[in-house]
Length: 232
Image (cartoon, rainbow, N blue to C red; front, side):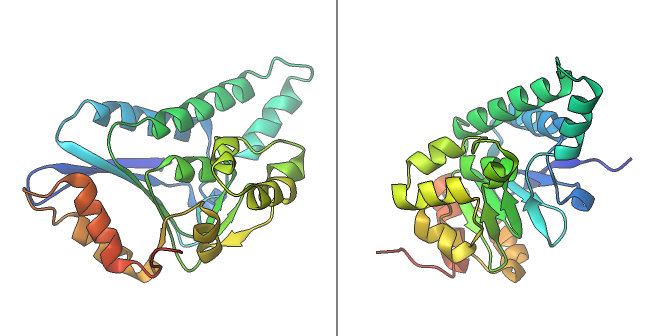
């Protein structure tokens, strides 16, 4: 069976390591299942206490999506199977998803998200919780929960509270999609790097010299490949 989350470490030149988490459910646009959430949380908890792991990078399999959000099919099947509740799977899913988003925002090591393709719902929750939020020329970002009668969740209310209310209200109430450049403009992403530069960017991250502090090295790598300068 294919692992739905790939968690590994990448050796860096100075002997330290970069944690690398890949969402690996390409057939469902990397939609988050409870198993995926638990695997991500397990990797983060393991690396939290490993001093040689200095940062964590998130990306996803395939060319279409970072993550389209939560796996609605599993949630739906649980609700249908238990009319009137309790919906054990649904309750566990949301509890652990929200805990993951919270813990990721509090994570003691730098976190990087490569948000290529669709970045929506619960996928946007993970993306937004990372310290360095990278989009590409093919990013499509939205918080479309309103279209299924739900509120913007997975930390979106916090993300929106940091934005101009004009943008946050519009995105929350319409579920509208925006591209990578617009995501930077409204404050939902930090920088745009062309997707064909990903391998070169990863290689640059792995070249961390021993005397380089981690945040400075990450920022230097991002600046080297960035297609978007600081906004006024």
